[in-house]
Image 1: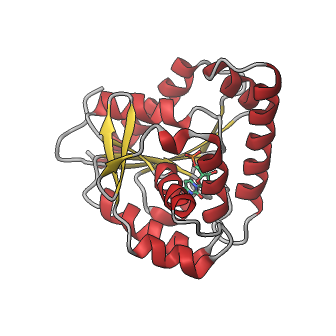
Image 2 (image 1 turned 90 degrees about the horizontal axis):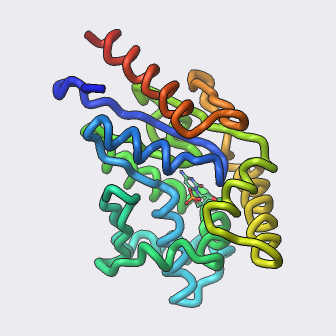
Length: 229
Ligand code: C5P
């Protein structure tokens, strides 16, 4: 698929944890020659800094200050985003369980979200980006050129996540429980809960392969590029 260089689209991919957003977003970005930005990694980086500074995930004012005094950068690579927190590479650390749970707790605070959304808007403003997260189509880029909401049966999402990490036994149970808890919090929070934008195309990937999902997304992008001429 060849994207016209003059048409640098903004593509928003939202959906719950374990649905395969990152894989689809990074494969699509590679095909288009776009940057893939994982917005969740920014919430993870802030949660990590809160852990390191011993700041409570419930203290909105302190988290707001912390964000304002932080430099969180995402560098797209062929295997996902490199995450820099104040210049330090924390890409591996932010994937660990304590940070994952913390990310979903710091993300409930409106002030934190305002800061994050502003940074994400700056990062994607020039177009040529595939940004994935929970509120990209609803809040970060409500006028994105293409909006996808990826969903899948919760049991299937859990299985995929466990397979991806080769987990079994107690570790698998803990990860599944964490996924359910995070899902619930993301969907029920007061500000920017996880929900499909009214004009998003929802793709239920429960019974689809990764290639099939990617194909559908590519079709949408192609249609958009044709419509733009
Ligand atoms: O996508 P990822 O699993 O890395 O996101 C970690 C957490 O960050 C999510 O569970 C969610 O609470 C939060 N998040 C968010 N808005 C986004 C991206 C992530 O609230 N756009």
